[in-house]
Image 1: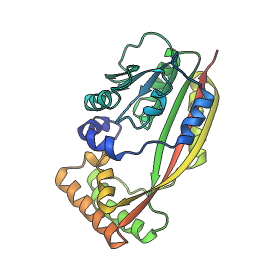
Image 2: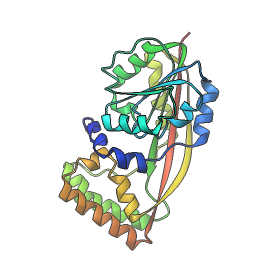
Image 3: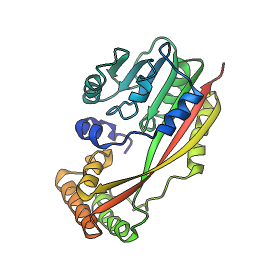
Image 4: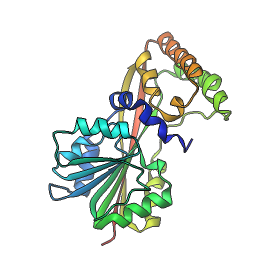
Amino acid sequence: MNELNWTFDTVADSYEKLRPGYVDELYRAIFEYAPIDENSHVIEIGIGGGQATLPVLKTGCALLAIDYGENFCEICRDKFRAYPNFSAVSERFEDIDLRGKYDLIYSASAFHWIPEEIGYKKVYDILKDGGVFCRFANHPYRDKGNPALSEEIDRIYAEYYYKYYNKEQQKPKEYTEEQARSRALIAEKYGFTDIQYKLFYRTRTFTAKEYTMLLGTYSDHIAIEETIRNEFFSEIEKAVNRHGGKIEIYDTIDLQLARKTR
């Protein structure tokens, strides 16, 4: 599963349209911790479809986006063409040679693809003294208000997803505060201080078709053989339609903030 990051760029257009952005409260928390302006230099690791880019660009900072996917970079160069302070490079963060020091480095639902000991160390090395690392991620959880639908979807996953990957089925679990805290404190091992974490919540509602289109932007779903994937998604659509035609997703967004020691 850790080798599936290549899959995202194959569905870059769908990803840009279907993956959600992040709540305003999250950006307020970031900018309170790390005020940035037109004099600041910022890196975004794993820009994807630019879901987390515009609020940062609007500060006037110089923003360099690094993403393995060339299609993502092209989409975002066009999407943010009105911002001369924006640039995007298609390369792995692990491999790119970065000169200079940065005020803020952040990553939205992407940093987990980088080996921990490589990612945290490199971020620390290229931050200015007092600079900030910010990592956040969305953790969706299926419809809590419709247990019959969730049970049916679990049965479909057992038949298609878990059988395909020859894995033991895991029941979905809602992301917890303890997970957020443990994840945030990883930064301490690499010299970061003033570590903070916060959680934000929201719900999203999808039709059956919208939901399977969203699932089609997840790496492990993209990698399923096409015929099996089409049957899998068809069964999920039927299940959602049998249970009212809508599915609600409960999102937990965890935010990690950490500072390079002065």
